[in-house]
Length: 253
Length: 197
Image 1: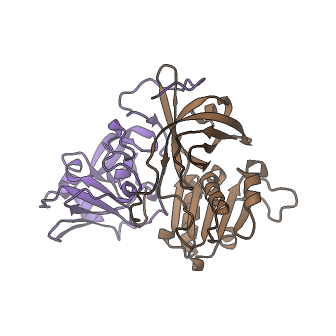
Image 2: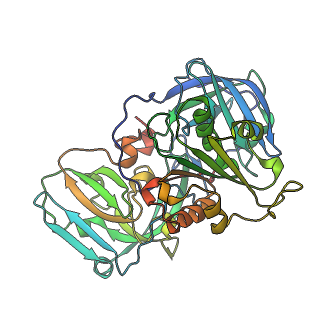
Image 3: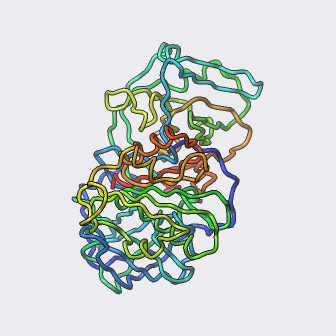
């Protein structure tokens, strides 16, 4: 953990607490990921970009906890997560393959007050940069932006393997427009007729498809460690200040 | 309030009493940070302890290493639920760095290159409990993992082991550092699951 100026304490955010969640629906999000729609009556709401600790308990009392970004949530209502299955994982394969409507699990949250975007807090443009399932907290920010009247320009650069691997594909397409720019980079396989060949995100593409540093955007980067390290370093080369770059990584568990 | 989730059995390994509650053993070494990774050359690196008189105790990279690094094997616990056990580290004990520091203050703010901060009680840094670490697993610390040097305070959650350490400032009260202001626990004992407040 690292490297940002310290912001003033915010006491208005909901305190993290334990909540019981019931599964309302699970559906495939991508070939390797599932969307979990949870009913959480005690949920206080959460800032876009925050996360939860999800805890599973086995009949003998054994427990396993993992952190997941929140895709969307409403107070006293629904919490939506999108979980990518890690090969050889302990928790994600269960969540993606086994969970059914009516199942109950525990959530601790909302967590994280740094990698968040709050409507009305700043007029600065916002550049989101996501790799793979790292797009989930960024989708939450784009959706929060789309649901309100915050005038900040928003743009998402989303690096993804193939068209089938796009998380929240319909929702992102529906958000795209004048207030929200959506740029996709396909790393393995692009759709028919796509103007660019499939390939890894490069510094040149990053420079061409993001809000320039002169406009001082707040930048949020989420993906694997390799993705985040490369993108954050290119952003600084392109003139963005380290203090404008928020990073979050998935992986490890 | 815990209850069993239908169908979950988990894939536990043999129980290990060195694993704090809510933690899972990992073999790799995940990376977490709030912003871009600073790259600091050891030629430019400096470490400072500042006390309430404003006196700076300062070490260059070579001066730090000249104090004598030791090899230690220990367990680390990240608030994001992973732990690594029996991890070999090399670093300079903070007892050596504090040897000539006189201070009435009982708390310390750790400062990093890049601006990160974290707060600790002084007593948690002394008596062989903390190091300025320069190597892990037999290699110089990667910038991603806090190199060239990071604080190493293994008995607390690992966000207290500030990466890219630049200095320690003595302070009279336990003021919150970076993650502590964003809702993480002021102390962070993994055995009490002091993750958030």
